[in-house]
Image (cartoon, rainbow over all chains, first blue to last red):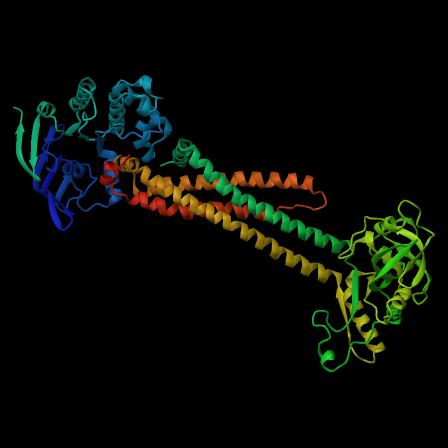
Length: 225
Length: 403
């Protein structure tokens, strides 16, 4: 479902060129559960941004569901993000002035779905993350774990193919972190391709496939038997 | 993205930052209010002035000596000649025109009016009885000038209310003799105060027969001849007749000017329209300032909400959508400020009407529309730059930026 072909991403820092990703080849199958690990500066965030079409490679190709995304413009990429990709962030990124319900509704608002349909889908997403009774709460009225569950509900409400999680438990205590991990693993079991970037080795080990990056190159790629 | 959703999201930001919103609303509403109030004053002034003229009647022709009022003597001066005086006989000669209904020759000057040791300087108008009805004045007591020949100068006068009270106090004035300059005349009546006239305060004047006036001021020329015509449609024809009759009487020299009351009215109307528009434009500058303020605040909002913009992009917002969100927010700010300003402006106008009943404050309709549209346009224009900046943000940087 995902294929990277000699994909590079260079940054100009001062007069130095940094290879955040250096000719990476990678294939990820549908419904896979992949962890990406590495020290900071290894390129794992850049990889996640490129997989999420937030960033574009300097060279090489990224083929998502058979579509080469390298030559897409901003709007086309936005369309793919909307339809196929769900994001979860370390700092949740909820819009503070909107309620949990409205935050989850946001991707559907952007793609012009009718209020009735939206309301149905938000309700079912809230149910999946177990926050039906918190629908009208603002993010500031929710705990960290609850916030991340709202963010997860938002990421799946458009029924994407891929869920990209950037340190999803980084800002959470162990208990709520475990809840969040369980939740996204359940989504993976239900058919969603899950890609998690993490520092946390324990969490990395839970996945079916663990990829380690260093200096923009894959140095280790192991599958659980 | 649906319009109702865009509006809802805009609304959530407005109530999220109430202080910011209120400040901007005040700024915009002051601008709109200024437009409404200043144009109300301008339009009120126009109404006042044209009302003054209209009260003189639109069926009047005004004859004055000299070829052209504005250029003074013109060629005649250069040739060492002055225009022939416009005499009482000239005025009488105009009765031969069919369309002429009434004629009021006018001389004007200033002279002291005395009674019983009291003295004050007063504007003096020398004219005929017809003047009263032509100018639509009324008498408070007694009668106006007696209806005798123009050339005859009976020693009578009509006085304004203020003159009456200054010279006579509460005692009766009618029938008393007052001294005007070196003449003595009997007070025939007191003018009512309602009369309106350009440049003359009816309450302060003394009216005497025209022949007495020319003698008093030792002048052989009239200041004006006011001609009241029967049929206004034949105004131009009558004007030509006046010109040719006076020309014949002045040895073939066309040395008078005849203007229609209408023309004067029209030019004043134009002048005041321009004045009102100028006032409106000046006030619009404050709208522009409010617009720039909105731009500033929106620029701040874009950097404050970087993370949110990044998120919106991550969940599939197109650049155009981000742009629209910010532009609509700016328009909502300027639009609601404008509506507030309209309400304030019109309410204050109503208050002013009560406070100053003599002056008619008339905020013109166009001022409301124009200020609303200008406010909305400035919202769009000044919202565009911040919105474009938001739309162009790099999602990765925006997401990692300050929240």
